[in-house]
Image (cartoon, rainbow, N blue to C red; front, side):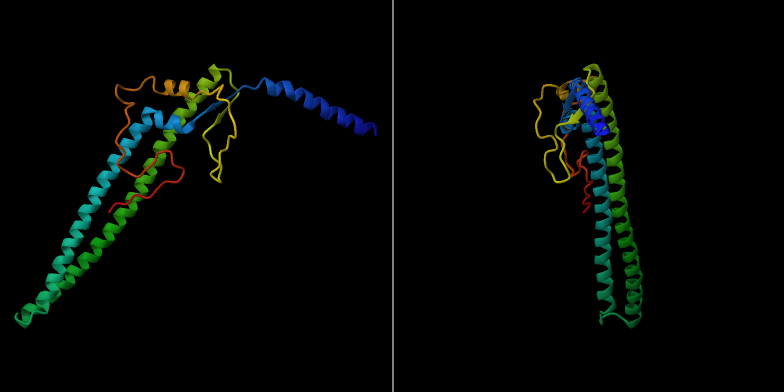
Length: 216
């Protein structure tokens, strides 16, 4: 019985002591999506991704056009191989030429498929590298701003759970650091760098799932 009373007293004391400790904890919030969208390096990275994807699409189209052209030539050779108006010797030459062209087409199709697969990987890797670099900058800026404001904890008010529901149910916005952090991030931006670029690709630098890139 004495042990029970002692245990209860100890738990009550710890609970009591934790109240002022919690009260002294200053919690701040930020909108990570807003920080991402407003950071000049994010826009710069997105422009680089768009340009890179545009070039990959151009290269893939060139390979695809060559493949189509080769297919037309192959069909022409097949027609000539079956053209009874030609000599048997010429038809045989056309058959062999058609066979050689078919082999070239198979190799070209394999090369195109390999190019597209590698392009997918290249874009995804570049996207993740840029995303991580931007996140690192934002984290550093949030940390510096939080310390300056005397905050012990910073929560992303725009975060969502795995079920796509709001992670933060309520915040008064009293200790929101978003604008201050964004100002810190863009303090050294080159002139005109904060202007939003024209987004021509389906990529999203902040997206949790890296999207595919349709190259044809």
